[in-house]
Amino acid sequence: MLPYLGCIFLFLVGIYAILTKRNLIKIAIGFCLLEYAVNLFFAFIGYKKDALAPIYTNVQQTKNFVDPIPQALVLTAIVIGLGTTALLLSVAIRIYEKYKTFDIKEIKRLKE
Amino acid sequence: MNYLPLFTALPLLGAFLTPLLSKIWERLSDIIGNIITTLLLILSVYSLFLLPIFGNIYVYEIGKWPIKPIPLGIVFTFDNLSLLMVLIINLLSFACAIYSIIYLDNYTGRWKFWTLFLLMVAGLNGIAITGDLFNLFVFIEISAISSYALVAFGVEKEDLEASFKYQVIGEIAGLTILLAIALIYAKTSTLNMADIANTFINENKGTLFWFIISLLTFGFLIKSALFPFHFWLPDAHSKAPAPISAMLSGVFIKTLGVYALSRLIFNVFGLNRNNAPYYFDILLILGILSIIIAGFIALKQENYKRLLAYSSISQIGYIFVGLGMANFWGITGALSLIFAHALGKGLLFLTAGPVEREMGTLDINELALLKKRMSFSGIVYTLGALSLAGIPPFLGFFPKLFLILGAIKEKMFGLAIVLGIFSILTLAYLLKITNKAFTKREGEEVRESGSMVISFLFLVFLIFILGIFYFNYLEPNLISKASEAIIRGIEYARLVLMR
Image (tube, rainbow over all chains, first blue to last red):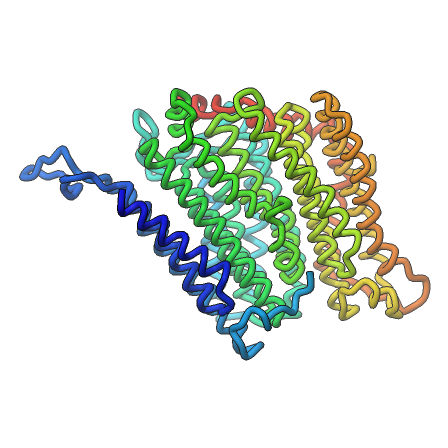
């Protein structure tokens, strides 16, 4: 149970950072935390107590192995997350070049 | 129909060819982009004729991993609902691709636009045809990431700001959807949508079930920009280049939001008005609020594209009212509105391109003062606006009619009146632009460029012809079959797995 609670905690920290921080880079970090929380949760799903690696050979004819699919999916999700984080940061850098600040209070050219 | 993967493979091929070949000649990327979108349009129209022969559903097993007895691999499923979405996506991307040949003269980095555009089309087509939950997420992210980059394509101050907001909000939605997928996998140990539907039939609909549903609904409502989650849309859609605004408003929010949500809710989880009345009431109420609030905000807008963006939120409200009714007329109305709004709003956003290019501003009060006029864009804009507001000879009339019929059938007369009145409000705020920007008698006449005129004429022709022959062609062959696919609910699972 504890690892799952850890995931939820990480998720909430990420949400907190996105909602309250005024610095674009800190928002990006909060977003990364959010993403790690979800990925970690996904990885935990495949876990089984005392299970072995999912390799089935003539030598090791194990019946009790962990579910390999979540690991494969998490790998994909991590790569997608890499792409989004890279794009987020590069847009943040371009914003810094234009506005000379990372503070969202000063970046509000768009009217309501 | 074993050409099904081409719907994603062709645009991906194009996306990777453009950076390479544009080193030889920059214009080559225009040619590749247009060839790919034309081929996609031909394929999707061809599927329209081929699908009934294959019994209205076709399942493609990727890599020949068999779907029976256990679905191990990824499958593409193609039914009438997917067909509808694929047709809309490729009609509009065809028009936008032609339009972009001239439009891109305003920007540098022509091939970057085409790479991102084709990636987005690949993602959208993939969402429409996939039958696998994680695959759906991957395609959502492909199209979403390329749209974030496209919103910032102008790299002006406002573009970057809009893109940053859009990315943060969009990714929160994406991660919520991923969390829901993780929970679904934990519960069912499968990712095939049909198999998940089969597992959930016999399950007790407990707390976890509703938690999953609410996570998915939250994520997809952000993607579709329904009322409480709409705040990112006006910035992103008004700051994107004109063809991208047209794609985003026309098909993007509908494929990522409306289509994906209704596929999961109706076909996978088998919700309907009998077993989940409150859920559909919530959708209905959010839809009505969206129509009313976004309608009034649109009335106050002074910026050409911002007004159109708020109008999109209002029209998304109409679509969700239709889904919320969840009866045949409501869903037919919602689906035909997806079709009519894609063409109509696409056309309106495309007219913003030449106006911005020739007049140098999009503020409608400044446009009114300029001593220039654009008669052709004005006529095209007005025709599109009339269609969107639901004036009879055009395509946009029928969705509104069906929605009002659906409301009357559910004995919600107040709703029927609201829908009618706000359809007139739609006309009021859309014609505000015609009135201020296009009805000028003096001033020099500015002409639009060739490829833009072709795409305008293409869309106007479709709106007009499909409106006139609506009951002869579009309704029996496409819309009513697609709404049957939704209404049949988890019958979808049986059709996919029985093959």
